[in-house]
Image (cartoon, rainbow, N blue to C red; front, side, top):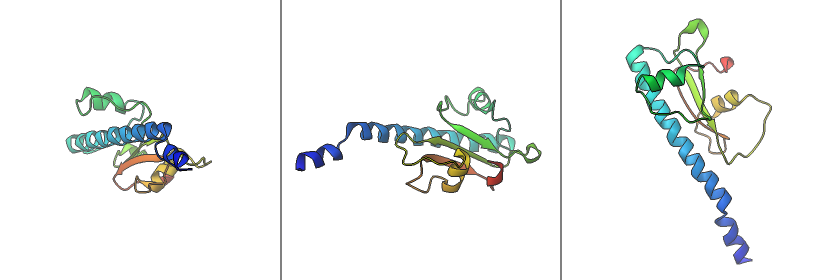
Length: 129
């Protein structure tokens, strides 16, 4: 019985997923720093979700953005005054019909049971997610 408990505690697949999630949190922190610097320079966040990666990389704000990162930005009047960025964790706990962004917006990275690593800035309007 003890052997089963030890095997469960050091489950290699779970450990790999935890390491992947730690890497995703690190990528998201780098992305947050890049977005904050971009805002500092331009007084808005990148306004086009299809080109934000190129804008941040070509502007030397960041070297790379995680392939699974999702970026949502304020679209009312093209203001670019808030953003939500998130990545789905490798070790997910549930499935939901709610959109990924609404789930991420509801947790903002403070809920350890969330299936997402999330960051945001500004006065986020969840209805635009």
